[in-house]
Length: 336
Ligand code: FES
Ligand SMILES: [Fe+2]
Image (cartoon, rainbow, N blue to C red; front, side):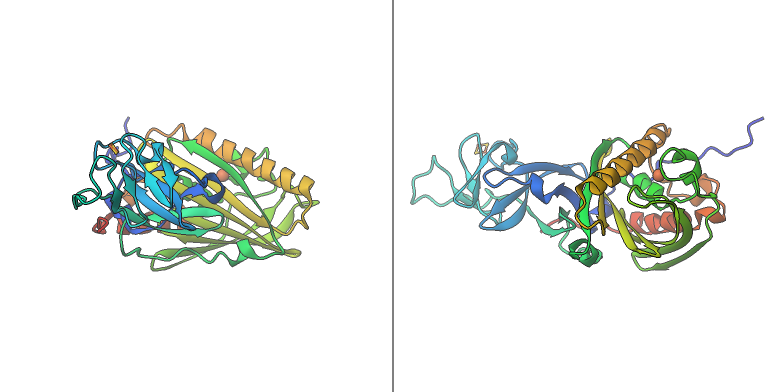
């Protein structure tokens, strides 16, 4: 007997237009070279990040002359030079040079490219494809605090949508099953959650046992999760000896691809062996998560909460679904 109602509508995809109104991580700062633009894909569109005049600039990765990617070019005199016919573009996207034109011939006004808002935080470059981002980046002071050692697990490139990756990071009921081999063995899998929503942020507080690579044994701790729309999740583990931070950052590249970084700030006293062990542990945790999530029939978060079963252990994930539903209802804006 078929007992379930099959809801077939797709969930929130990585190219939903309302996602333009939020900040998204697109690359590690260390991935952006000096003399060349870096091509990235965000929300199904090709953009580039370039260092021009000491500033990071986000620019549409398509030359207005013959539509080739400008990221194939190079940086000359703080401008992006197209590799095909040598047009040059300044930090505002204006064409400053068309080599085939005599110097006294005006440059056609159409010869320009869109630019995007860009900022930095947590060692990453962030881009917003609208003029009016609906929320700021979360506070990065714990990342900058000299007491903490910072390191990155990933990036993982996966067909799983950004929403599913954020949802998984917030979901603590899967630890004793999926992560029994890494850190979840001492967890009872019955989180007692306190969940609150404030605009584009969700806070979830959970008591749990932590068995980290840098701890001698499992310790009781309070896990404070902060979700910042649409796909940022901060996990702050308050334990007797101090606090550890893990941030899950996802770039919604296109409908078949997300790029996932897990950035850490742990007080490890600069001990390279402990840093390597903690990074290896989190990398293994990420591999365990992706092994499961990549088997989903449709790796998107449904925009209908009736499409899945939820219990009280899913309170935070349920609130996250409500937030994604609110995002999907937003109107998109396009860059000026
Ligand atoms: S295609 Fe870029 S200059 Fe011609
Ligand atoms: Fe997990």
